[in-house]
Figure 1 (spheres, helix red, strand yellow):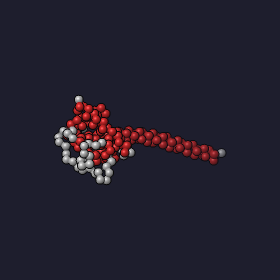
Figure 2 (cartoon, rainbow, N blue to C red):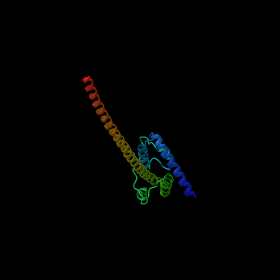
Figure 3 (cartoon, rainbow, N blue to C red):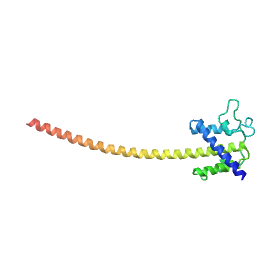
Length: 178
Protein backbone atom coordinates (compact mmCIF):
# COMPACT_ATOMS: atom_id res chain seq x y z
CA UNK A 1 0.00 0.00 0.00
CA UNK A 2 2.80 2.43 0.85
CA UNK A 3 4.45 1.80 -2.52
CA UNK A 4 1.18 2.79 -4.23
CA UNK A 5 1.01 5.95 -2.12
CA UNK A 6 4.64 6.79 -2.86
CA UNK A 7 4.05 6.10 -6.57
CA UNK A 8 1.08 8.42 -6.53
CA UNK A 9 3.14 11.08 -4.77
CA UNK A 10 5.93 10.71 -7.32
CA UNK A 11 3.45 10.83 -10.19
CA UNK A 12 1.74 13.90 -8.70
CA UNK A 13 5.10 15.60 -8.23
CA UNK A 14 6.08 14.55 -11.76
CA UNK A 15 2.84 15.98 -13.16
CA UNK A 16 3.36 19.25 -11.28
CA UNK A 17 6.95 19.37 -12.50
CA UNK A 18 5.85 18.96 -16.11
CA UNK A 19 3.18 21.65 -15.73
CA UNK A 20 5.63 24.04 -14.10
CA UNK A 21 8.27 23.38 -16.76
CA UNK A 22 5.72 24.11 -19.49
CA UNK A 23 4.52 27.29 -17.77
CA UNK A 24 8.06 28.51 -17.04
CA UNK A 25 9.03 27.99 -20.67
CA UNK A 26 6.04 29.73 -22.24
CA UNK A 27 4.35 26.43 -23.13
CA UNK A 28 7.19 25.69 -25.56
CA UNK A 29 7.49 21.90 -25.54
CA UNK A 30 11.13 21.87 -26.71
CA UNK A 31 12.24 24.29 -23.99
CA UNK A 32 10.24 22.41 -21.34
CA UNK A 33 11.86 19.12 -22.35
CA UNK A 34 15.30 20.74 -22.23
CA UNK A 35 14.50 22.07 -18.76
CA UNK A 36 13.33 18.63 -17.64
CA UNK A 37 16.44 17.05 -19.15
CA UNK A 38 18.50 19.46 -17.06
CA UNK A 39 16.66 18.14 -14.01
CA UNK A 40 17.39 14.59 -15.15
CA UNK A 41 21.09 15.33 -15.05
CA UNK A 42 20.62 15.75 -11.33
CA UNK A 43 21.35 17.94 -8.40
CA UNK A 44 23.17 15.29 -6.38
CA UNK A 45 25.25 17.69 -4.33
CA UNK A 46 22.64 20.44 -4.15
CA UNK A 47 19.49 18.45 -3.35
CA UNK A 48 20.23 16.26 -0.30
CA UNK A 49 17.28 14.68 1.38
CA UNK A 50 15.02 15.12 -1.62
CA UNK A 51 13.92 18.73 -1.16
CA UNK A 52 11.09 19.89 -3.37
CA UNK A 53 12.09 19.19 -6.96
CA UNK A 54 9.72 21.87 -8.20
CA UNK A 55 11.80 24.60 -6.62
CA UNK A 56 14.80 23.30 -8.58
CA UNK A 57 13.12 23.57 -11.98
CA UNK A 58 15.32 26.53 -12.89
CA UNK A 59 18.74 26.20 -11.28
CA UNK A 60 20.65 29.22 -10.03
CA UNK A 61 24.18 29.92 -11.19
CA UNK A 62 25.85 27.80 -8.51
CA UNK A 63 23.25 25.05 -8.75
CA UNK A 64 24.19 23.48 -12.08
CA UNK A 65 23.29 19.86 -12.71
CA UNK A 66 25.92 17.16 -12.75
CA UNK A 67 25.77 14.17 -15.06
CA UNK A 68 24.84 10.85 -13.44
CA UNK A 69 25.58 7.41 -14.85
CA UNK A 70 23.21 5.37 -16.96
CA UNK A 71 20.32 3.50 -15.44
CA UNK A 72 20.35 -0.27 -15.27
CA UNK A 73 18.43 -2.36 -17.78
CA UNK A 74 14.66 -2.04 -17.83
CA UNK A 75 14.70 1.68 -18.41
CA UNK A 76 12.28 3.52 -20.66
CA UNK A 77 14.70 3.52 -23.58
CA UNK A 78 14.85 -0.27 -23.49
CA UNK A 79 11.22 -0.91 -22.60
CA UNK A 80 9.60 1.39 -25.17
CA UNK A 81 9.59 0.95 -28.88
CA UNK A 82 7.16 1.96 -31.60
CA UNK A 83 5.14 -1.25 -31.19
CA UNK A 84 4.67 -1.02 -27.43
CA UNK A 85 4.51 2.70 -26.76
CA UNK A 86 1.35 3.90 -25.01
CA UNK A 87 -1.32 5.26 -27.32
CA UNK A 88 -3.52 7.33 -25.02
CA UNK A 89 -3.26 9.43 -21.88
CA UNK A 90 -4.20 6.64 -19.48
CA UNK A 91 -1.58 4.33 -20.98
CA UNK A 92 1.08 7.04 -20.64
CA UNK A 93 0.10 7.59 -17.00
CA UNK A 94 0.42 3.85 -16.37
CA UNK A 95 3.78 3.84 -18.11
CA UNK A 96 5.05 6.75 -15.99
CA UNK A 97 3.76 5.08 -12.81
CA UNK A 98 5.54 1.83 -13.74
CA UNK A 99 8.75 3.69 -14.50
CA UNK A 100 8.64 5.71 -11.29
CA UNK A 101 7.78 2.61 -9.25
CA UNK A 102 10.73 0.77 -10.74
CA UNK A 103 13.13 3.60 -9.90
CA UNK A 104 15.66 2.70 -7.23
CA UNK A 105 16.35 6.30 -6.16
CA UNK A 106 15.61 9.91 -7.07
CA UNK A 107 18.38 10.08 -9.67
CA UNK A 108 17.11 6.90 -11.29
CA UNK A 109 13.59 8.39 -11.27
CA UNK A 110 14.90 11.52 -12.99
CA UNK A 111 16.61 9.49 -15.69
CA UNK A 112 13.54 7.31 -16.18
CA UNK A 113 11.25 10.36 -16.30
CA UNK A 114 13.52 12.04 -18.83
CA UNK A 115 13.61 8.96 -21.04
CA UNK A 116 9.85 8.57 -20.78
CA UNK A 117 9.46 12.22 -21.78
CA UNK A 118 11.83 11.70 -24.69
CA UNK A 119 9.76 8.73 -25.83
CA UNK A 120 6.61 10.82 -25.44
CA UNK A 121 8.21 13.67 -27.39
CA UNK A 122 9.20 11.31 -30.21
CA UNK A 123 5.68 9.91 -30.35
CA UNK A 124 4.11 13.38 -30.37
CA UNK A 125 6.59 14.55 -33.01
CA UNK A 126 5.93 11.48 -35.16
CA UNK A 127 2.17 11.94 -34.91
CA UNK A 128 2.47 15.67 -35.59
CA UNK A 129 4.71 15.03 -38.59
CA UNK A 130 2.35 12.36 -39.88
CA UNK A 131 -0.63 14.66 -39.41
CA UNK A 132 1.20 17.54 -41.10
CA UNK A 133 2.08 15.30 -44.05
CA UNK A 134 -1.55 14.18 -44.38
CA UNK A 135 -2.75 17.78 -44.20
CA UNK A 136 -0.14 18.82 -46.77
CA UNK A 137 -1.20 16.07 -49.18
CA UNK A 138 -4.87 16.89 -48.68
CA UNK A 139 -4.23 20.60 -49.23
CA UNK A 140 -2.15 19.74 -52.29
CA UNK A 141 -5.04 17.69 -53.75
CA UNK A 142 -7.49 20.52 -53.10
CA UNK A 143 -5.15 23.00 -54.79
CA UNK A 144 -4.72 20.69 -57.79
CA UNK A 145 -8.51 20.46 -58.13
CA UNK A 146 -8.75 24.25 -57.94
CA UNK A 147 -6.06 24.61 -60.61
CA UNK A 148 -7.94 22.16 -62.86
CA UNK A 149 -11.17 24.12 -62.37
CA UNK A 150 -9.36 27.39 -63.14
CA UNK A 151 -7.81 25.88 -66.28
CA UNK A 152 -11.26 24.75 -67.45
CA UNK A 153 -12.71 28.19 -66.79
CA UNK A 154 -9.75 29.77 -68.58
CA UNK A 155 -10.38 27.54 -71.63
CA UNK A 156 -14.06 28.49 -71.63
CA UNK A 157 -13.21 32.18 -71.40
CA UNK A 158 -10.68 31.87 -74.25
CA UNK A 159 -13.34 30.26 -76.45
CA UNK A 160 -15.84 32.96 -75.49
CA UNK A 161 -13.35 35.72 -76.33
CA UNK A 162 -12.55 34.02 -79.64
CA UNK A 163 -16.26 33.73 -80.50
CA UNK A 164 -16.85 37.34 -79.47
CA UNK A 165 -13.89 38.45 -81.60
CA UNK A 166 -15.28 36.59 -84.66
CA UNK A 167 -18.69 38.18 -84.13
CA UNK A 168 -17.05 41.60 -83.83
CA UNK A 169 -15.23 41.03 -87.15
CA UNK A 170 -18.49 39.95 -88.83
CA UNK A 171 -20.27 43.00 -87.43
CA UNK A 172 -17.51 45.33 -88.70
CA UNK A 173 -17.60 43.65 -92.13
CA UNK A 174 -21.39 44.15 -92.35
CA UNK A 175 -21.01 47.74 -91.17
CA UNK A 176 -18.49 48.46 -93.95
CA UNK A 177 -20.84 46.99 -96.57
CA UNK A 178 -23.64 49.27 -95.54
